[in-house]
Image (cartoon, rainbow, N blue to C red):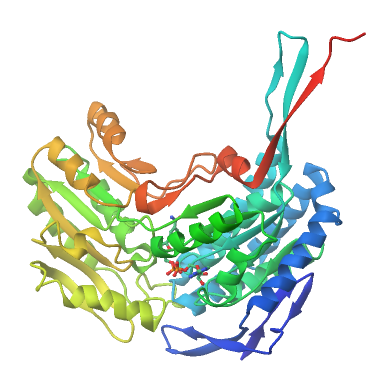
Length: 478
Ligand code: NAD
């Protein structure tokens, strides 16, 4: 079994105390990689290395074009190693290979390329003042960034944080999720190959509480914390950030509502609705896990949706034909299984799906569920959708907004007025109309309520990963 170490100051190293853990392949349900298990001592080494690289190294002082060129080279290396990078995530957490290799790796590369270019082309405000002074803004790197990533899009979400942080001249300590560690070590290896100076991108593996994650968020040498993960963890991390007065960006869970009006293009609505809840086996923060369908088309929508769900290919995620793999870990499987097993006692009915082999849950469709049931209010993070009918636009908006989450929502309608009207009324960071998952990296990304604090993307990432400085010059003296 291959070993994956921390990457600190340009070296791949074991833990200071020699601790290791297994990464489990959730389809084969056996270890496939050995990984260094970090603790506070490893985090401290990494933060010190990042600090040195920030205070003394070339990275923050480089021109934007030169720094951008390194990020573009790293993007190219990811693309050239797409097979290996995709397989790492697939073996770690069971994502179908056509999604990890053909989508996530290229999106990770796109993150790097986009933020390299965005930083280079970014303009800053200048303010000629009536008093004869001139004010302008400098976007200076913030310092050492702690990036904590989840397991559902390991490489893609790591780069979503690392790319803007690096592009703006910061140095980074990345802690990937313990269920998906391998691609982070490989990313850091490739960064060195691309010419990134030692200490600029450090990776420390380990768990969250009482482990590397907690040590990193509590470390006094950190200047920014960017976190993607569960809302409960976000609360803990926000407290750690508050203790050190460190700005924190939290991208948290979701319970996306998908509202399908009777005037929708039904084939389009079914196609996107299936993708919205079953992509990555439902382990997507943006999952459209509550579908509300206007009554005149409810039965027809259900029939088409169930047929499409039943046609999905379940199996080995390394197989290119597979659309639904196992859940990412035994622990997560047990959590999702709990929701499947309590559908009937909560008042609902399973139309299709249920438990599969191993740690697999088949694409599951639930109807007749009371809106107060946990299945309608809690993030399940698996391939289970609750479909409910509604009558009026007002009712649809109320149902969609009836959650503590507010990451995203979908609306399907051919009525342009309704599309704008309902989009404006939905409590969500992103609303997709007649589509899903389409992203422009310049747009704000983040959530309302339990779905997060702050926005990333384009200039929103710039605001977070830099210290904007106002410089005011007296220009009236001769
Ligand atoms: P998680 O919160 O359990 O873990 C995420 C990361 O935080 C891991 O690296 C973990 O080791 C670390 N961690 C856990 N406890 C910590 C602590 N006390 N201090 C510091 N670090 C700690 O989440 P997960 O189960 O890996 O990911 C799934 C969750 O992530 C879901 O809720 C999902 O909706 C959310 N998510 C959100 C987005 C988004 O963009 N909003 C994207 C993907 C996933």
